[in-house]
Amino acid sequence: MSANAHVLAAEDGDGGLFTPGGPGFAPPTTDIFFPPPIVEFGPFAISKYTVLLALTVVVVLGFWFATTSKMKLVPSRWQSVAEMGYLFIRDQVARPTIGKQGDRYVPLLITLFFMILVMNLWGVVPLVGQLPVTANTAVPIVLALIVYVFWNVVGIRKQGGWRYFRDILFMPGVPWPFYIILTPIEVISTLIVRPVTHAVRLFANMFAGHLLLATFAAAGFYMFNPGAPDALLGAVSVVFSGFAFLGFFAFTLLEIVIMSLQAFVFVLLTAVYIGGAVEPAH
Amino acid sequence: MGLLAAEENHILMPHTSELVFGLIAFAIILFAFWTKILPRVTTTLDERADAIEGGIERAKAAEAEARETLQQYQAQLAEIRAERNAEIEKAKQQGAAIIAEMREQAQVEARKIVENAHAQIEAERQQAVARLRVEIGTLSTELAERIVGEALSDDAAQSRVIDRFLDELESQDRAGSQAEAR
Image (cartoon, rainbow over all chains, first blue to last red; front, side):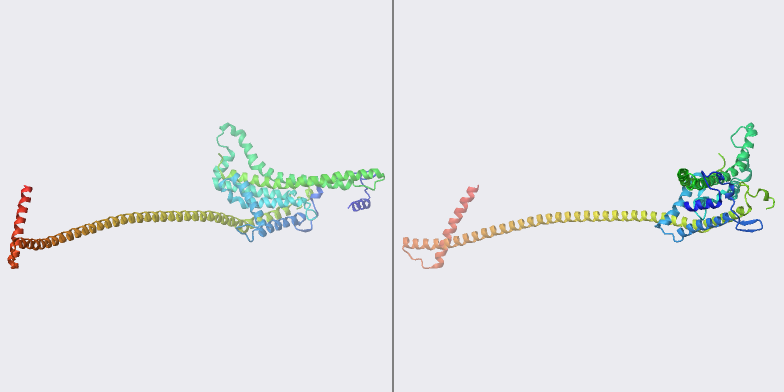
């Protein structure tokens, strides 16, 4: 790898750290989030994102069909894992936030959780992925929109359209003059900011995390320059690059945590929104 | 797409392709979960809960049955014990009755023996009295013959005399005893 990187650097003619007249460090730009389209037809393009989306479907459904195709009363090891996944969403997310009716929304929540989890984790899968699908704004936007439409429809169906929007616009139990301030705030926060933050929170975390990892990796490659004119500086560059790669691995572990956490947060918020729509406010 | 062309590589601008494909991917996964996967999982979990509850039920039933059997055994044991006690009581009573009967029989027997003995003694006494009377008569006759020197050959007359003599004696004797009784 070291020889390769060196050769590559030499071939590109840009040298590296401590090479006089070198190009300096060019950090990765947002271009890394725009892989070239593989196929284009009309307004659609098959890109790396599309491939990873398809792989996400395959992985999620493959896992769940494999683990639940021959379910037994005494579960096998993998069946237990699947059951734990289901019970986690049902008992830790759906029931505490939505209550007794929570079980009805488990399919939506479990779909969101495992889909987002796998899409996030593509960011740390070497070779195949190395690009979290959720770092593309379109995917979190689509999911947040689905959730937004869903909890509003649930609210209207459960409480009736009139009462549902009255409770959002005019929070019950507040003296009427406060509505002058409160109603615009409620409209903005509930109907506009809520879906936007829902999508942006996921997107921004994945985007920033991926950029961070890319920067550490790029810096590691840039600083690795044992063929520098001064041999001592060459050795120093190797040490520096070692630190950069150490940081890369540490942040990769951190990213895995953040990826799981963001999938959980997205689903938890979804459940909270549905719970608010199912039960009349106060 | 032409509208977005200028902003094509802006990071916040969603691409139509990913919007649509994301929606499709979501729909596929949701459909599979809703119609296939989760029904299996919930069915299995419910069945397991049933099986566990059934096991508990069965254990309870077995325990109840065991307790019932134990009670039955204890009841039988108590019954048998009571029966045995009754038997023993009965045997005791029977024994006592037998002893009492035996004693009575023995007493009856003893009384009979005593009576027999009395009767025999009485008969022997009578016999002795009869013989004595005859012998005394004979002896007295002989004595009288010798004293009188006269042979009283007529037996009939002889016994008449003796009987009269003895009757007189007896009547004197009876009169004496009657006087005594008075």
